[in-house]
Image 1 (cartoon, rainbow, N blue to C red):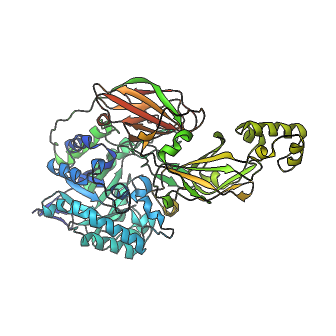
Image 2 (tube, rainbow, N blue to C red):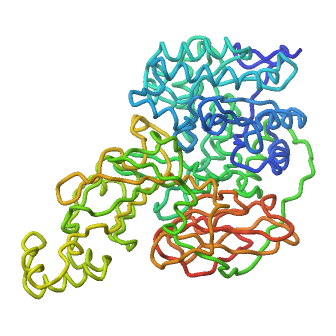
Image 3 (cartoon, rainbow, N blue to C red):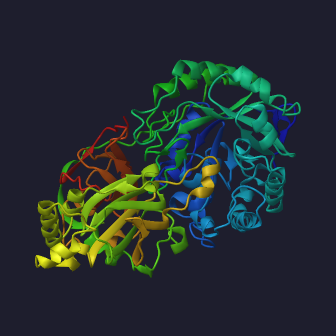
Length: 622
């Protein structure tokens, strides 16, 4: 068996070994394309591939594990080994990665006392139960077991988060207990406090940074005990969040200079070699002064585009690597074709309110509660009630609500609230409220306006005039709140506040409103959407489009004119779209397209639906 060691440098079977790695997250690319991406990595001159493993995909429900499709960890390890690449595995529990909740499973938040990434026994117990299942899948691929895994990482950027050394020691103990025998590393921001907080005996500290290599390695060297210097995440670009004004890009000239210096002084893993896609509801978010959810594309301005095309950055990096290692192996690979399927007309549409009972069985509660308490992890949640005692809605406040709420009266839009707006009390103009109410309400409103009356003083006058005071008060008038989980925060202490939906209460006119039917809408069953039911404009709705696959190619769904929502192809969740950009098209890999009839379903929440979409042969990420 081969042997990998950490001494003054890395050694493979007794010979010095320079780690030249690229980050590729197998769970962000369809499995049919894994080999193409890995061949391109090797052809650039890299000898190693690095990947995270996302706990939330592997154990989507507590005790239920998934190792199929894009979660086929063993399939990926086998492929990388077959292609002659060494492997660095970063196996959770926390991965950051601009990934939903940093890879932690949302079901952890069912525990109202949950403390994440510290010595809190229920968290540690959950990690160990996960490791009991995960590590038997991967330890057989370690280099001293005949495989190609040379390093594994303990936790991730822990010094940025906390400094619970007992917790970090426990993480090492759990990994060793469950069969990890290769050398361990940690990775942290390149600062003294980060290394002091995130390092752990028995693991080599490494740094994550995108520039200033000599200075960063200088700080790192104070913590490696004479061991090698390695940049475990060499940031060559950055990620985008909705509304950031344009696609984030790295500085190619600076990146080339830093790569050259890293290879001169130490070791590197390029982040990202290929970024891939946050399919489904898997984008993460950050929260500093405000919520900033990440877009669906994780292009990251990597060395390969989101759909795997070679970039100028790839070519420049290849030249620098070959300068240090000699000519890379010549390998053959062919880019998947890009194809335009043209403009598609809508073939069916139906309002969410018409099919809510087909998609979900409502939970009847006096009070509102969050997604996690109802066993829901991602997507949307609909709170339905009736205005049974209120004299209309003059003031509205949603307490402890995340992340975005569309509010409706009588299935007509009243107000949309996002992030910090949710916790404030909002005055609802009478004319706006009446405009989305029943005819009787509108009549009552007209009477009030003509007579200079307010909701609180109008009852007697309306009754004397022969109008229905019951209708005026809103009795039995529908009241709906659709809340979207925009992606849980993946970095920092806000992670412990990531319960989604209406966690506390809805306050109308200063009092708490009770009596709710709550529909969990993870949208993992859109095959149940009945397009023969009623459609209504300006409300959340589903739209169906169809096309023939024919000669298949990668394509890009252009959502110009649409508002906000999520798209599916043949039941597969492609991810979110939002008119505010910067991303303007969603990537559809060819393996998701069938040779015959294909169905695209758009769920749109803002009532902005032009009735057509277009499948184009070029991306547009701003």
